[in-house]
Length: 386
Image 1 (spheres, rainbow, N blue to C red):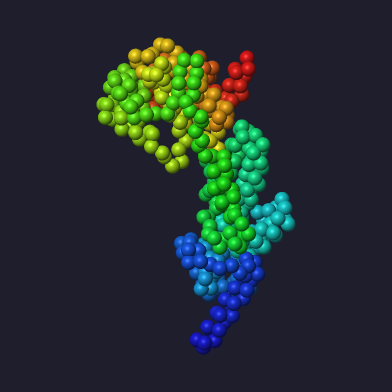
Image 2: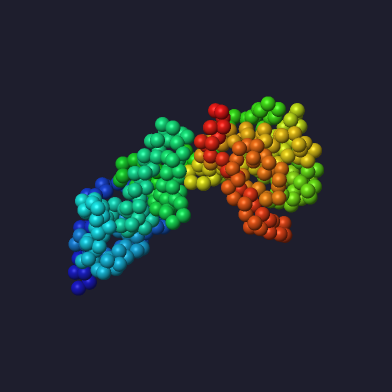
């Protein structure tokens, strides 16, 4: 009886293997591929293999180099939700009521195990991925024609990284291995629509430095800048409206050193502002938002150099970078509501006061007010042409 049972299992496994190879082709699985698959999938049970051989459940996502059929840990979950294997087809295709043919095509792909690239295999994630793929491809085509297409940049950002309540392809797609490239005939979906767009469109590119305005030079930080900034950071009045408290000379130097260090995924441009060869302040730009299509700007002026319009002049140059180099569609400035000088700078820059929050931000032992100013790319362009 044991031999007969073994023969049945072997026969079933052979049927599954032949069907799998007919769909995916016969490509070698390397030891690295095996390890990658074992980390995300589990061996199929005898009952699951029997259902596959009968054409009622999806084929394996992978066959390891030793022939082991591997499936997602929740391989049977959709059948359970549908109320049984016999109801699975009708439950599945009902998600494509607007296009029955597309539903049947998705069903055939599902049975063939062709959704191994999805973290979760379900009609919802299949449809969500299909929509994101189409939108991402169109957005990339538009951005290649016009890198400052703000709508396309936002759309691509949503497709890749997601937005609240809507996961992007980064969350939907599994990391894949060299075997996947062989069976899919090239780049995997994740490489093509997550990794490649990030490299092409969401890589932080430094502008040509230094920047020069009528009176100022905006350049990268240097460790020796600590000598100019240390007296200011020791002044409680200077630090009062900033996020951090006062710092001594060693702390200032270490802060500058850390800010100079390369950071993976960096989206921040910090520049020292010079006048006649002397640091008079600094300015910073943070790229943020969906598709890196928004930015936040900030600035400081050393107390000894206040009152000369340096902050406005430097910030105007950084706004030009935001809109014309990085192609963002919106820049915001978030201030301590008591910082009347910075509020005046925002007004001189043509930024709109959008929000006046009362006691909303905890800073240095107290609840402080916040002002939020903003400027859109269209508003910037209109000001530049008038």
